[in-house]
Amino acid sequence: MKTDADAAPLPMLYRLYTAGAQIASPILDRMARKKLQRAGVSKARLHERAGVASQERPLGKLLWIHAVSVGETLSILDVIKELRQQAPRMTVLLTTTTTTSAELASKRLPEGCIHQFAPLDTPAATKRFLDHWQPDLVTFVESEIWPHQIASVHDAEIPLALINARLSEKSLMSWGKRADLARALFGRFSLVLCQTDPVRDGLRAFVQEPWKVVTSGDLKKSSDPLPVNDLQKARLAQAIAERPFWLASSTHAGEEEAMSAAHKHFVAQHADGLMILLPRHPERGPEIADMLRTEGWRVAMRSKDEAIAPDTQIYLADTLGETGLFYSLSTLVFIGGSFVPVGGHNPYEPAHMGCAILHGPLYANFAQAYADMAEQEASMEVADAAALGQALCALWGDDEVALLQANAKFYIEASRNIRKDVAGHLLALIAP
Image (tube, rainbow, N blue to C red; front, side, top):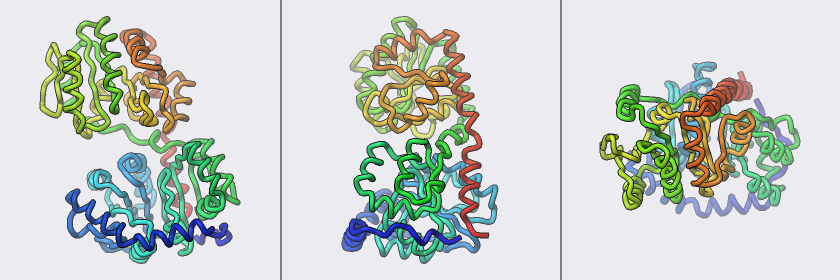
């Protein structure tokens, strides 16, 4: 399939960007290599960001998907599985920029897939990468807009897609101020699949063929449930027993104090109440524990194998990869990143587990999801710590919890076909 040869011309701003990238290329290469080296990446892979491949290209069709980090990688793992099911002879090349996403890829990519660190958006790195891998289709995820790579892929007449596109209103306004560049770049995509209608409408202003930009829905909504260790679940369930408890998930600095204040409301009504606190960044565990103990709480830390005792008031789940475990145990869940200006976090994961979901007012990254869930009575917004505490007390043991749980489960189950549709759209771009 050939790409659209009539895309808008590349403006002077693009040429200045490319010239700057070319001049800075040696410095950028060195910085990327040192960063990978510090992270313990093997010597054979240290030059991947310079476009130097550490593996041979397999025969046959190859689809290159770029997902910058862990969040984007998690959102497309099930799409990759779907692609492999629909086209088992095709190789999927996944690129990311972080070592944590590389570790995730090594554990969860299906057979027939390759991971490499993404090439820098410089002329030399992009050329080396494309010359070696010669992809039949290139797919960027969410908001990955790399000008030189977009232009180079288009010049090579390789179809280019943007999937799960997510741009904030502020980002769209910023692109509008550079409309010539936006038209030149977005016009070079063969297909843009957007999470929401507002993103679709915003991006259509930059393309000549609006039908290429459509709403597909959020891929995170269509992902499989998070993994759960059944043995650990049984042990924790036994330790919690019949105690009233709630989960504060993906909290950030500044939110743990609010969780503490909310829990004071909870234990005032339920003397044996327990909070499970799962911080977004587990390495903050020791400082969080110190703060909570200073406030007088009896805290057990999972990272130190401290068990939930009868007098434990807060269980600090400061470990990686166990979010699904705690969602599977919980009835009431507060999703963090929504009391501080982070933009909120994924409500789909707890919805898969049938949790009753509460969140704060700051959720710009999932505005459409929370709006839809609120309309379907599948989540509840609370304004602050006091409101959260009151909601927890009102909901525990009330019939409204079962309604929130059922609605959340229905909301997520209705989105199962998104990943199949996205995979079908991508495969249709690859010439037979």
